[in-house]
Length: 152
Image 1 (cartoon, rainbow, N blue to C red):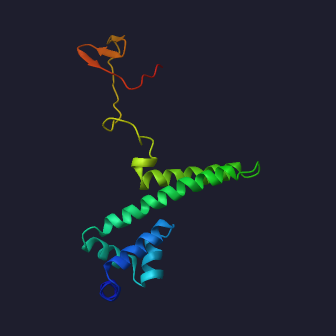
Image 2 (cartoon, one colour):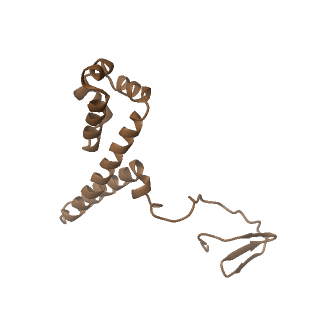
């Protein structure tokens, strides 16, 4: 079905419709069934079959992420004393989805310089000696620069 539509309207017209629908909050299921009249698996198969098609979808998600971030501010600004918990839930969820769809812009790590860091758990033997000098942590012969220290 999409292949036949592609022959009639061209690939770019289909990609433009994907961008428009997804960027405005539409889901792949809505796009497939309501716009193209196919099942969602047929849409995904078509998108994966051509070079650059999935990147169009990912770019549309980034547009939607930006919309969600702005909507989250509207949720917060329009909150009343009666609906603060609901407004917070909506705003938080929108920001989380924005971070998933455009992590370079909306994740907690966005804008931070340097390589991505992952957490490290250090288990220290009970009788080991920890020595902290400036920003360097020493355990035996191992030296490290901790990102965050938690004292318990």
